[in-house]
Image 1: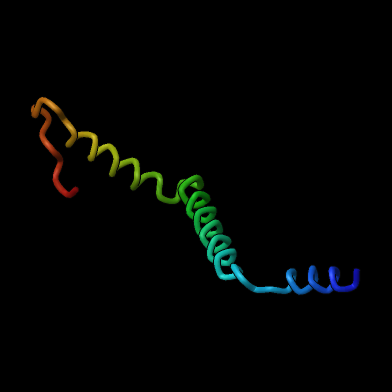
Image 2: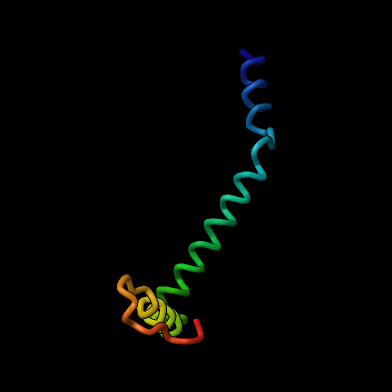
Length: 70
């Protein structure tokens, strides 16, 4: 029984995969910060303008002139 407990404790102290978990946590933190910035509206005016100008360029019949600067 003592060997089983020792084996379990040894498995819990292993650091295999620790880097992967750290990178996943960092990626999640970056994604959450990006979502907070975009939701807060800090970039909403610029993004709205960008997507409006891009939508003016996407025209399947070719009649809408594309706005410059994109």
